[in-house]
Image 1 (tube, rainbow, N blue to C red):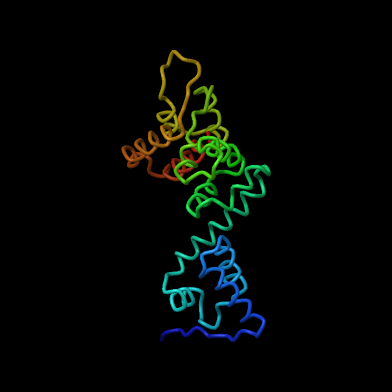
Image 2 (image 1 turned 30 degrees about the horizontal axis):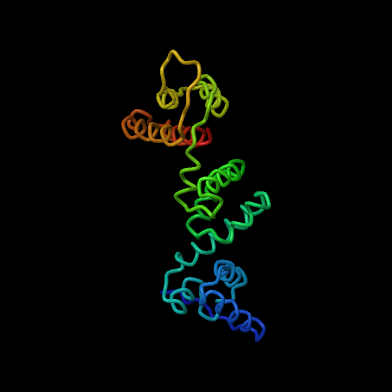
Length: 216
């Protein structure tokens, strides 16, 4: 038996609000993600059934496409809470993909990454590619002992073969090493793909080690 979603009516005030928000979305205004978030969160779509039904019937698109716009809006809002005033002024000019890329960064790194991307973009709103590039700056002065200690702190005692093979990227004679985040992650992925069959029950540990390394 197919379940039928019960449709509910809107009040006059709610219908007027829906029309106003849909106008913002339809005209492609900067607040389109915010408008759709309000429609979703306040269930102003309910005369169509579900939110998926609303997106498909009203806009002829799958809900995922609109959810991406909502996520971009949420990313701008969250990032705006931690950015200095000058950088915050550039947030409205960010594309949706750039806003989502920025939101992937840990909050403690987001400000530094955004500042570097803006600098590389000559003070203009950076692109998603610029955000990714800014996140891959070298981590200076990180010793292998420090890397291993961070992993050890996260997991306590136990094998850290995967982590050790990843960070052993530089001349053993050097006491410090310059690691690029992309190099670390690429090396780790190669190690996992090659030796995953040997991990067995350590698979979960290996995935978690990657998280630790991504924060270097």
